Amino acid sequence: PLVHFLDLFVDHFRDVLSKSTSTITVHDKLFHLRQADMSINDYTVHFRTLAASSGWNETATTYQISTIQGKPLGKGLVRHRTPDINLSIRCFHVKRLSLLVLEEANVDIILGCPWLAQHHPDIHWTPRMILRWRCQEEYMKNLPDSGPISSTISLCSTTVESPNSQSIFQIPKEYRAFQDVFGKDHLPPHQPWNCAIDLLPGAKLPKGHVYPLSTPEQAAMEEYIQEALQQG
Image: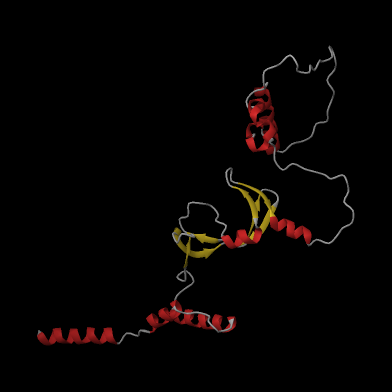
């Protein structure tokens, strides 16, 4: 029996000591790898060579994302990247980019400091509104001169503005003391100095053109009419 246990011990001893430590060595080399005075090509080749010999797959080569306080965002681990998508902020800023997928984050999209520094938005922090993008100003400066600008421009609306979406920041500062006049649910009370709009008795209603509407446009129009009727 003692010989049997001795054989097991020797086999286990040889099994432990005979294992290669190359994986640990490659891990340490990857962890401490720095570009230093290497060219970017040499550094890339060196990194890819070590990564290939480590046996790690693409999913295993993760890196961490942290806040400026050093705390991890979500789980802090990034393993995947999205394909190129169009990021549209309102109708004035469209950018094609690829996003990193952050595990268990509590927000939809995080725009980091390098991205904000590049696009340089003016942000009104209290209502959390983006007022303008300075990168558009730089873009407009670099456009070639197309000659004199016409005094007439065409504007189109991309949304149907609901009267219930009135914000105090849409009211000029000089009139914010009279905010009740701009109520979203009702009209202000009639006053003696209001200008009367007298209708002609027996007048015929003008005939207008009928335009076909899509289902979303029809729903938006009906909602707008109902809100206007509720206001009086």
